[in-house]
Length: 199
Image (cartoon, rainbow, N blue to C red):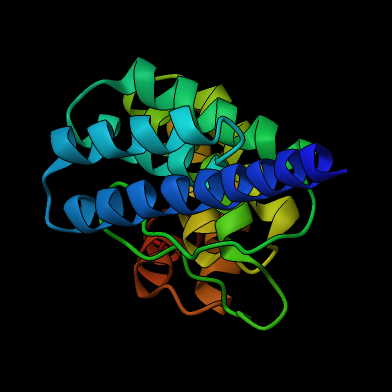
């Protein structure tokens, strides 16, 4: 009986240490990420992932760090892992994150959506766009919008990609929705490409 209690105690201590260590590494990495020290942030996110291989937020921000360092393929891999982990797990605490361009991933209706669940798709879309995988980026923006239908910047950027790939009607539709959600630049693009002045 004493041996069983000791084993349970050791398991509980290990579980507590496991969770705290991963979170502590993640928190330190987050500070370094926000300071722009992406290489050192990656080191801490690596440790968080080593301590907890299911830590989707660590994969997401490690991907953002890699993006900022120009490792686009590595970023796509990390975002893909974050997406896979989020698919497998439901619930839990999520962190609102910034995309790798420094913009907060905003929803027009924060109360209805969890923007951090859309973040890996949104960030992977930006990485794929930079890699000129426009169709993959469009698909990722669409997945982000399936999670958060009021993600204004996803409409705007997806509209830009649709315009770039020759889908004028799709671009105008996305820019119209982005304009309705408050993206000022969208109204300018609507005037220029969708409602041109008669000659």
